[in-house]
Image (cartoon, rainbow, N blue to C red; front, side):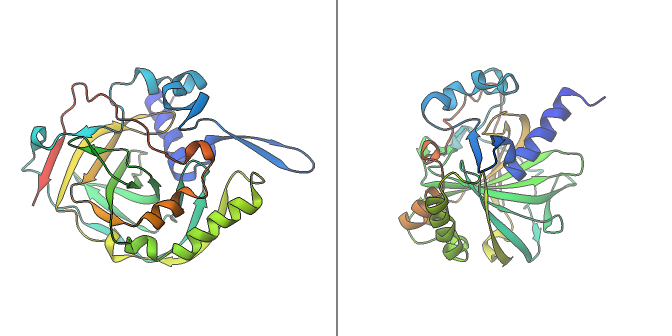
Length: 277
């Protein structure tokens, strides 16, 4: 019999990768009406998540919750860590509007990242704006999460923080598709729970560079059911993003999810490790 942890790990893997578990759906002869199971404001906002569904209880009771504020002076150096090499291939991807986030979904053969001799395959990436994680109390304009899953269902998330400035070249490669996604959302309103756009071959160089300075800690999914024991690697050096790109990431989202960042959670007894080449 699968353990409770394995059950929740499988659940969050599907939620993060597919996004569909964020909705309840009812079908009629004329339309499909979807309802978000959680939002980022109002009666279903982060402070209410645990009360929305019994499976969301960890959102209130968990001790390893994400995101967190990373205090750089308290990070513990880890001399055993090595630069992380990301082995991704050029693949055809889809851009998805999950109503609570915009995501890119990857096929199984995209590639992987190796940590402590375990391989984690890249399955999906999505954006939050403003950032979920903070460094020394500073919040950033946006945050990218690249979600990887190992063969045994463990989840590793690589987080990149963005400050306002020059346009992000990764988003520039899909900017037309991103604006199309936003316009389709406006025209179709709530007629579909998720909307896909085929992007084509996607292989930005910025996503393939090795990680030479990053923070590492054990956390949770930052969306319900807030499953714990996910590994987070937060890249220490922020990248830049333009105001227009932040607006484009928000445009397709449900009005209650425009600012889709969960507040920082208590660190409790955890330690944040720092690897610096």
